[in-house]
Amino acid sequence: MNDGSLILGIETSCDDTAAALVDIDGRVKAAATASQIDVHAAHGGVFPELASRAHLQAVLPVIDRVLSEAGVAGPDVRAIGVTRGPGLIGSLLVGVNTAAALGLGWGVPVVGVNHLRGHLRSAELEGARIAWPALILLASGGHTLLARMNGPRDIAILGDTRDDSAGEAYDKVGRMLGLPFPGGPHVDRLAAAGAPTLALPRPLIHEGYEFSFSGLKSAVSRALAQTPPPAPADVAASFVAAALDVLMTKCRRALLAERSASLVIVGGVAASAQLRAAANALCSELGVALHLPPQRWATDNAAMIALAAWDYLDLAAPPRALAQARLAVTAW
Ligand code: KG4
Ligand code: ZN
Image (tube, rainbow, N blue to C red; front, side, top):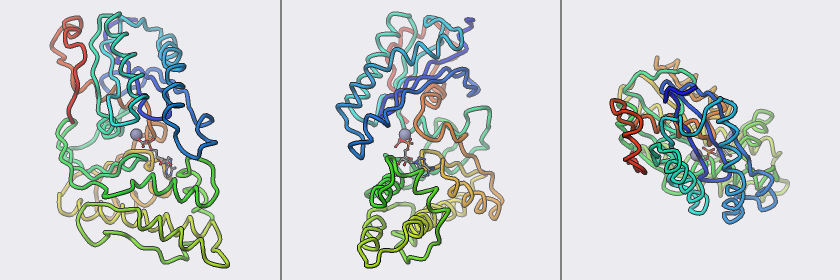
């Protein structure tokens, strides 16, 4: 098949080597990921040099897999979208250089995509359509921010985190509780079995749109040092209650001030069942539409990078002319 209807997305910013073929409406025709969880588990976090080496081994096979799954030849893709940052520099270099080389060989344009923009676009994968303007919460391992989006390319940041991201706090609490890496999903599941019995702080909850999670993380560490220590499930439940209270309070404040028609929540923490339930309750109370990426596209993936790359193509130009653009680096 070749009608230039698919963009090949490549994502290697952290510890997953991912490729996907996505059409302009966000339909994912093929996707593949080589996970590095086993590589990093022994270190309790991502080991950058090992990540780069693993990407180098996996990147071409992963791309090959999606092309053959969709029955598409490389030169027939409309463009290549590749994560250009932020992320681990060695890991990013593998993806960007692979994309640049393939683009040159196939004669197709390459668009360098901001990883955060990929997340921000992920809620429109698999056909969902957002009513703009929307308020958007990105809660991932690397970032936590609130933004107003008037459209796919019109993004105004309202607030960022002053220290840790929400996902980082989940992961650190997971490590304190002796849970496997990455801790987020394990903390989320364990919390469902406990009760929020600990009084934990909710940093910056009463002001503005900025976040801070390091004080909450330290409070969990102090609670665990008590004798006898509290039950792990209760610690997880208390932490999740505090983190979600902060996230939802900021969303509520922004929704009331910005009068957005929709709330969009993206990033790895948006995979959390508890966050999804809390967001549903908030949006039905305020009469606002809630958009979440399909669970599979909440954590890092290449489909969101491919969808974001579509926003930067001049669709009026014939596909081959676009190859002149070579490596177009996108801003927000
Ligand atoms: O978006 P993402 O895959 O990578 C970054 O761009 O950072 O987010 C990864 C983060 C990790 O901190 C991970 O623990 C967290 O998302 N996460 C979760 C869940 N699944 C992943 N946190 C809470 N509940 C989950 N179910
Ligand atoms: Zn990410």
